[in-house]
Image (cartoon, rainbow, N blue to C red; front, top):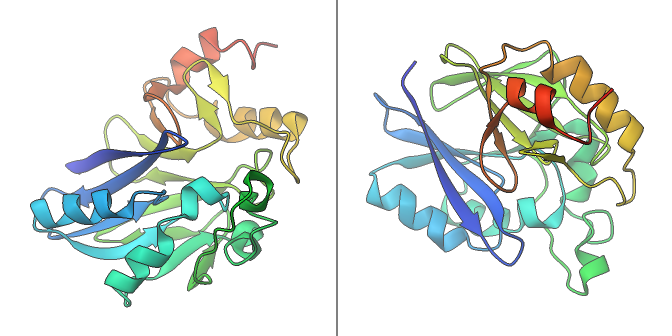
Length: 214
């Protein structure tokens, strides 16, 4: 499937938002809209794409800050997030924005997902996996029919790093175990689109990631 993924970096946390669409389609979904939602809306307009859904990997403030603006622009676009992190959307303490001295909230989830579900938006089907450790209900999305396999990973696995685990509900042991359970069995050429920094592959990180060495 010819899937396009556009990275929109959002400051002040250098967070990666993603616009995802099928080459043959006119709809897109947005993953983890950050603090600069206008950049995302501009990208959609420039490409003639309509917003089909707002898909979140987890509920930390830098990954949900743009939800309200996108939902206001396209009220019919559902907000989708892992069931375990859904309470973080509407709670500035849980989504850690309160720790940084400002309160960020999102409209509530229109749909929650858990491992084993298949999520289809904008004509693209994704398999959902629970990968807690960075946050209690973090999920990753593996796009079916892509070659190599494409995974939207949020703050789980980075090039040369992993998501921080010192926020409430975090656990390095849990994160490491879930990376091994979910991501390591995938083909080595699987491309991971992370919440911060450049893309990487599962094979590269298995061989070189200093946080995940046995």
